[in-house]
Length: 251
Length: 97
Image 1 (cartoon, rainbow over the protein chains, first blue to last red):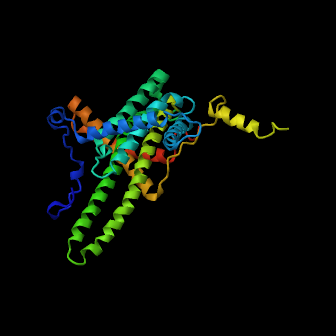
Image 2 (cartoon, rainbow over the protein chains, first blue to last red; image 1 turned 45 degrees about the vertical axis):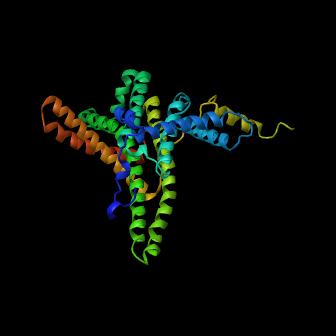
Image 3 (cartoon, chains in turn yellow, green; image 1 turned 120 degrees about the vertical axis):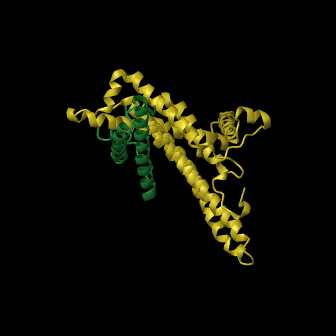
């Protein structure tokens, strides 16, 4: 994993490797898919096991489950309004999946599936399709008025409408790029500084002392990455709710 | 009076929480995250709008066989949409209503 042949291999960690032997190779079941399954399993376990007791005074696990639930519920209600209750399961699933993907990726030997743009783009397309369908179902043809703000002069329509359409189409792209870029940048930085530790550590007698410097940086970076993991999951969820708000209320 | 322990206040909060009373919609702000965060978000918005514009132009060009004209038009439109996105980032479109 570290510096093979004294080079910095920062991108090798994102390579997909089939797991589960021949079966995995033939159906393309990679470590990324395995980590997604693990994340889903952990989320289900957290919710099922955490809420199994239904104690009035929650234990630790139940407190975690309840706080994530209430957090996402608050997000939905504050952003979307009362209609937000309907979208709570979707936003909750999305938030937990992204959060667990980000956090699992920080464990040693684990793989970050949110660092692949295919994954984040697929999640963002789900949001995009949902907001478009919701807006079409709720508002019908009035949805297309979204692309032309009322009050604008009509002769500007040939400019405004394409720009608004492109802006609307850029939503899933910006949503996916933001998450993907944050995760890739963080993990590349971690890997680069980790390689520095190994390279500097082998530098004779003074090596181990100099190697403490990148080690310090890496310790700080891990803490920062935990913050980013939470923050990006939050940003993904809040942008989803903001888009849903636009789709439901359609200004 | 034992009832005078902020019951009305709690009732009002409970009603608001369960959506019995309509409440003023939240302003819906993203976490700001410092100068770097804002800069990064603005950059992502511009780049993604450019990608959307260029991609759309390229696809329509391939469909209609008008390469490279629509591509060029949509490149400019993508840039404009990027500026619009950044503008919306700081002035959300439903903030004033």
